[in-house]
Length: 172
Ligand code: PNS
Image 1 (cartoon, rainbow, N blue to C red):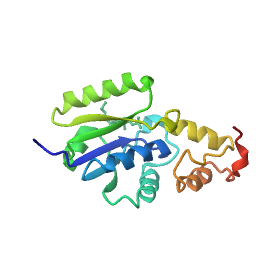
Image 2: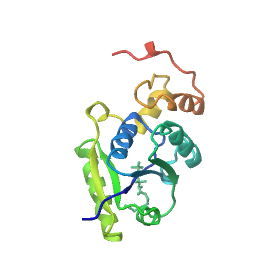
Image 3: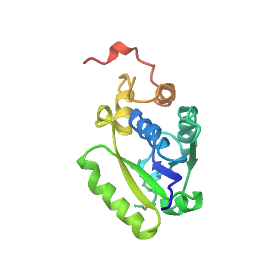
Image 4: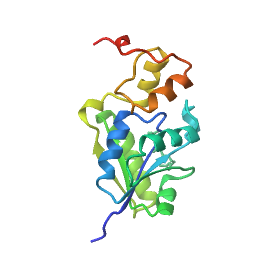
């Protein structure tokens, strides 16, 4: 039986959310090495540059010794092979993610049969969460406390030229 030692967790991470971080921590316990792979994804007009997203992730993952953050261009499977990764990890939040993720997993399988995609269910407290949601809340002056790792907050408000709100801003 072949052991899966290196896995890759790809995404835009614009910015990394608490849901992403939860997957990173859980996946890092399953593999010897986890490479968090930032895709530039210019079609999505990201808020943060790829370099900024890598720097933020490096800060957020600093306490996870087997997690490495990289940026890649081109096909994900080519980058996975280059890194020696046998597994692509993806997080699934809800049924609405499934069609798109299935399409990507099957495409990647077709392109590179030796690399497997595995899905991890997002923890229930983050099922609603997305980077887009976080950016909208911050842009409109709301608090993103708990929705992103603590280190992300100052980057987000600075980039959006918003003051850091106090916790009372959000009701509920
Ligand atoms: O966080 P996202 O935006 O959903 O991540 C999407 C990502 C980066 C995983 C996906 O766009 C990707 O794998 N891009 C690399 C290009 C590629 O390999 N495309 C073919 C696979 S469908």
